[in-house]
Image (cartoon, rainbow, N blue to C red; front, side, top):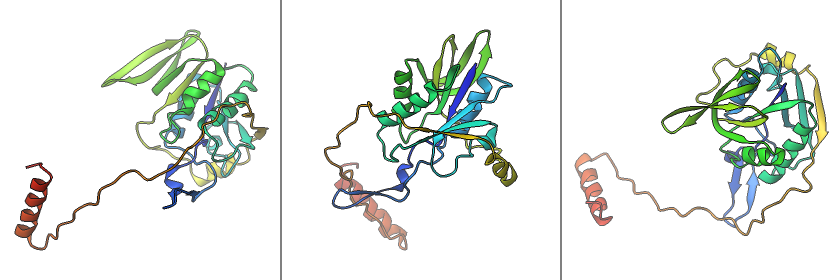
Length: 240
């Protein structure tokens, strides 16, 4: 049984810059570690205790994130455009995972940056996908996956291969120190070429800023005048 943890695969939308002419520029040109990636690694390790998970990431920047958290072997996908579409990212990840022998579970961040990718990855693999995953534990020949469901949680018994989209509840509490990171950089990294040529792609017809209304700011140096201005503004908007 082999579990795969996918990390550092999406661009951070905070780095996107939209010009007045609709042009897009990026402050960074490579994927970043996502908020859910540390939890995805933990879930992959919990799915098969005692055996290190295999890491899959993009071959850019720091690739030791997973190795510093217990992953012994990392596969890095190279040749995929940093601004690749979700369908292409999912296809490249699926191709890399298919090249790993005996994979029975894949854990990936339930990423708000590219929310389509976990489900598309599962579709490429032909496996079911469980979203909003909190935790997992082995039971018999399968897994019990705990996911958020409404105001509570739901346990799902899984008997075959599965993609788990993990949503972290909190920031990582015990981050690796510098010594662990330096040691992690010595662990093996296997690079594979991205295979996403046959992936469907979207055609972007245009980009524009969302509609917005200017805010009204009241000078609070005179509280009575500020209150009067606020009441007048609310009345003009039909709130009062």
